[in-house]
Image (cartoon, rainbow, N blue to C red; front, side):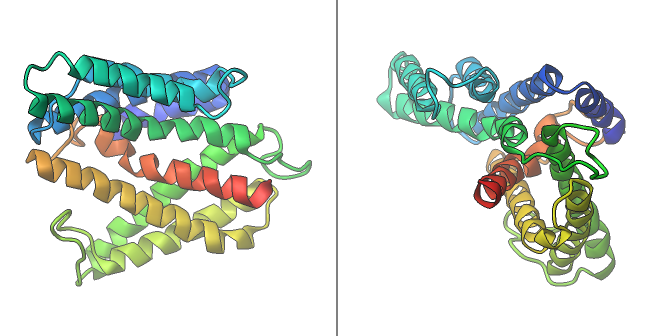
Length: 270
């Protein structure tokens, strides 16, 4: 049921490319950001949720509309931080105003990490002629690599952990994580990333580095959301997806994996 909700919009966006990918990422960011602020509120951290959602979406759209005026994006970041501070001034108790300011900025930044999907498309190296995925642009190809790699990690970790998992780690954040699942997820993701790299005309041996990097980032993203949910005292981030909680529950791994893969591409191909 989760796949039935999420996969069709993703496939359609990847087929259409360009602004459709940006639109899907922006919408998902807005929904995820709202859930982040609800979790923060449940954990005892007040925020300016509407401002935070707008701030998060603006950070996502920033690389998509060009950066001739603000190449680094720091001006937008500073502006949003200032607006959050001004909004927090309305809280009569400074002990409430200060966490309101911090939580608004944090929630927006955290959710906006999905924007690295768009940045990844911009930074992707060209696909050589003759490569299996030469018929699509490099940006969409690397997004496919990211999505397939994260899903492969989640799938490998689930099945290997369920079958062979004994020793657990970080149980104070997530009681189901096992070392066997971690290894199984890394192996699965590395294999899939190697296949994707070959399809993009890149040396598949690079998956030895990129596969574990993507896997560990995806796991960290999942654990970060688990910490937020534990602090809020809830099992799921929301109820938007039948049987699978909220949007944030489905994209938490991408929040950390997308920046890491983007940084890998920048370091490896520039």
